[in-house]
Image (cartoon, rainbow, N blue to C red):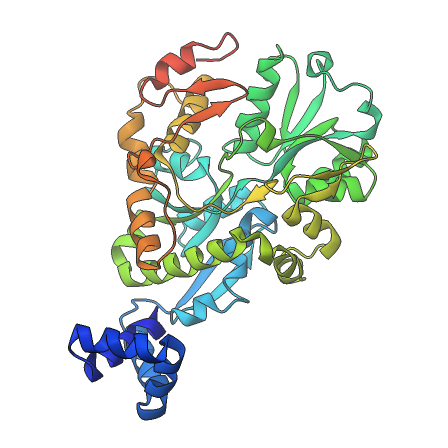
Length: 419
């Protein structure tokens, strides 16, 4: 953006009349025109000076940003080796965190300026559910899809969830899409997730060891641990999360409201860096490079082959087949209001919140859809069509359509619930 801005300003300075400017570019071509421009003006120096001036507006330059070492954090991680943070004048230190409760606590204690968070966490923190209330905002969705139900190999011939009474499952956190999607999946097959099975909160890095030891029968977890369970020959992929809800959110790039208010320019710079990284990650032509980039010890510290299978969608399923699912994971950053509303229906369905909820007001406070659209537009990134301008995109989960305008009717329509 800086380069384009300086180039455009220089062209306008040399050719102030629109007609003359367009005639010159048509006559010689854009590449030749830019080459001529660079030969007579110190464009590079102007760009550098402009960048320095812009970074001088930052309230903070050095920031600690948290992440869990999972593929969901790909944009946030990739922005560092791709140089996007540096290009915005930021010195970001990515801090690897061991679990979601610790992420929450470090954000509440302001030890992290921003962090990779599960999509339900900013809603729960803003509402004061499970922690002290602190207004927290979802700047972008880090990833959509990208999770799976993994079962122990001994259950290869027991694929019908109706037969899973008494099973033990691991989930990474109560306020996670993993918890809500697993509960939804089980309940649709007649299994009460609070009475018929056990759900155990387990850090993602410990899920495979627990599966190997027989402490759990399966888990709904993040990658690369789903694929690592297959690689280590301790589990198989029963179903991808995209087959429960295609396009579901999982993780976010989130900040506190106080950080946004106190550091608007720094926040905008972080926003730009993450949106550029999301666009890079969402381009499937970049997935091989990404797998090499983020599998490094400083980031995921995983076998590149395992990460590659996740990001490319060509993977062994542990059942003797190679699957080809290009959209196993994608990195679409817009935080749709309907996503937040659905999450809150599940928080109410399962008793995490009681009483009346102002779904619309809360989700539109927490999910910064308008800001994301504006930032993407300024970066020249494509936006969805006008049909989604309201922010309430259609959602279908296991064949059931969610009407975000009547969330309580949706909650009450389920036969298995705590609400």
